[in-house]
Picture 1 (cartoon, rainbow, N blue to C red):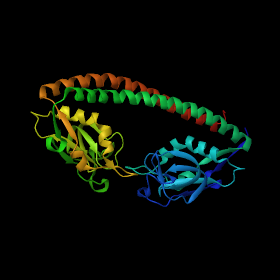
Picture 2 (cartoon, rainbow, N blue to C red; picture 1 turned 120 degrees about the vertical axis):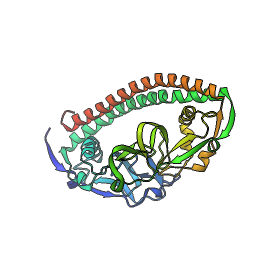
Picture 3 (spheres, rainbow, N blue to C red; picture 1 turned 45 degrees about the horizontal axis):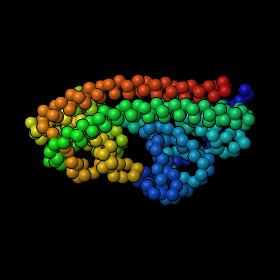
Picture 4 (cartoon, one colour; picture 1 turned 180 degrees about the vertical axis):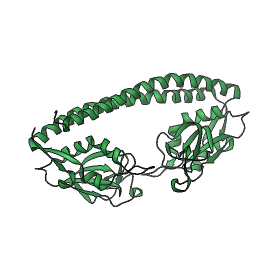
Length: 351
């Protein structure tokens, strides 16, 4: 296959959007691309064409879209100069294959980001148009098959992950007990605000509502569940083992009376009701937990002996489901590797 390697910046325009994520409108007319994998909506669309969209920070990802759209100020979009030289879909598949390089070369310690030069200076193999067309056609079919396998695996993994929580919800519904508001039974304790430049260290990981961000030299939590307060995801309740620091993007919930409400029981109830907690978030592009509604949640509290039994049975069910979920996680990783192998073969001249 005869080809020439050229810079992406020589065959495509590279720009970023102009608006903040808060400009999103759930009922907007046009797609709004941010750095999230999800696509939001917005009321105006100043851009139109066959676009390749690249998240500039956070969860780096690449999308392809044809039509009118808008983009967040940290989202790059590329238009091929001449479709007789480089097909837009070919450029998209190349950047998809190049994503690992972009991730490895991204900057930033807390939030990873890519620079315009990371895109413009990327070298893309540019064969004849007929070869590009053949590669695009093969990749469209092959990656679609892999994506379907990934989706099936993800769904089965999700079902195993949800089964234990669904089991617990059913047990609680059948058991019954005294119904009270969460805020009357437990204290809601926010994390503390820290910034890397001032508070950064090396001893303890700092968590918000999601994963760890950076490290600090002091801790304020140990072996407990935390809940997202700002920037909620659907996985907004999680357990963190050992000593750690909780920043002000997250919160923890502690029983007021261990003799009437076991902490272990409360933790598992909150985990089982994760979807409900997520639904209490407000905001379009970024969901923030409505604390008042959260404290008003109704909890069914059976006698402590029943609570202890439920916790033991839940942990047994959760252990079995966890093993199955890990198996599907491993399988999902294999499909991701297959996806990258297919892309590497395409741009290595093997398709």
